[in-house]
Image (cartoon, rainbow, N blue to C red; front, side, top):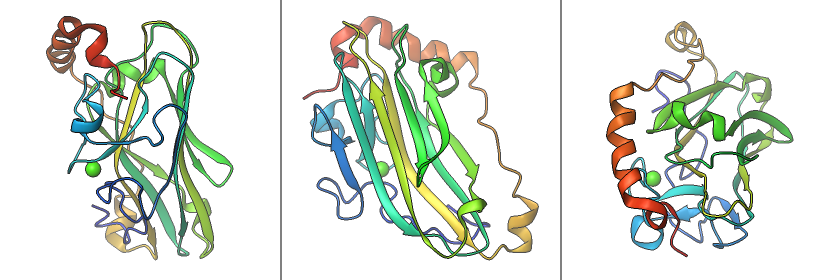
Length: 208
Ligand SMILES: [Ca+2]
């Protein structure tokens, strides 16, 4: 929820309109789309969707995979905050797999295999992108490349994307300090590591 920030301008940020999606452009080298439900994709040793039935799953296979979802939005003048939930339930032990969040051609943040411990479970992330709050149309894109590394995969999950923008309220300004992602407690890591270890390779991989 954007409140107390200004209203959300992203359409179908939870991806519940499914695939092909009327609001997001989708691309995936191996799967046709990053958009998934558990019946069509499995859960990748993670949560699957953060809300509803659909989410965006990047990576998920041990050969080269490139994917994106993107949407054009008008970002009203004022302030703007991009927020979403990110989970990285599994990551390869080495390599350059990444997920980047882009506005136009500007990378806002890049996640790698080194980000995995911090996002073992769905974690809320916010970015101050007020430099784009100018009343013009902008391009919001989540894009990923994961590389060929036999029997190892990286899964990046995104759901519940919002772009809260417009004239700031006094309440919004008071809370406008952008949060850093909370640290995941060791207890959660242990709970999630056990089924992943038992489940083995096939359960981690995205169903084609
Ligand atoms: Ca969803």
